[in-house]
Length: 219
Ligand SMILES: Nc1nc2c(c(=O)[nH]1)N[C@H]1C(S)=C(S)[C@@H](COP(=O)(O)O)O[C@H]1N2
Ligand SMILES: [Mo]
Image (cartoon, rainbow, N blue to C red; front, top):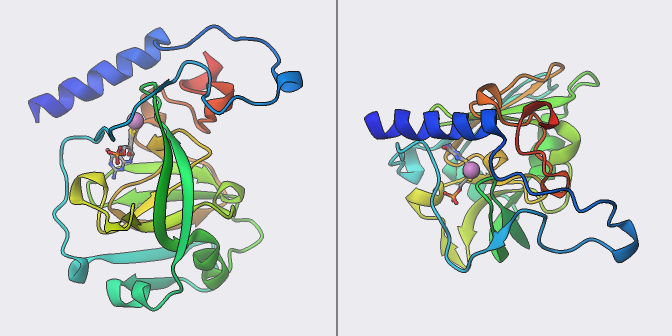
């Protein structure tokens, strides 16, 4: 608990001080977008970042609750998830603590499939993701309706490990990785945006790595 509080306080401090913000290189349109966003460095390993509590979930005990501003709320068990057609996507990770990792091969169920089943109501504009470690994060609905957004169960052909969010985590590759909730438990559709764990501690509501939206109010 002490370690956890220390980690949270130091990350809050980063947000207050605007740490890791690299100088803005100016408009890059003409050169085309670099693969590595400004202020990031490439890593080959895969760091583990969370609040220090890693839920130990037997897949048989995992359930996903899809609810809120939808026409058809539903619950999935692990077996329900297995009945869905798996998809594979390869994408890059960009973490707000300034590491990026290229070419992660994920397998899982497309988020578009979840959205298709749930049928969001017209006023559902945001989604709040909640996890088994009581973590939460917010993402606009439109950002989940992308072909590379998955509920991932596998990484590089292997079941997702506990430390990386197994049995099931979200992967939203075009936003900073704190939006990719590990040990996902609930997907809540809503008309109102509301900050999650890091967003209420100084981190950006949206988190676009290409605009360096690390901290709140574009500091
Ligand atoms: N449930 C949960 N999901 C989470 C977190 C967390 O603490 N709890 N941390 C986030 C942060 S800050 C990052 S950078 C990534 C890290 O994922 P990784 O440990 O697989 O690299 O998970 C995100 N998803
Ligand atoms: Mo992070």
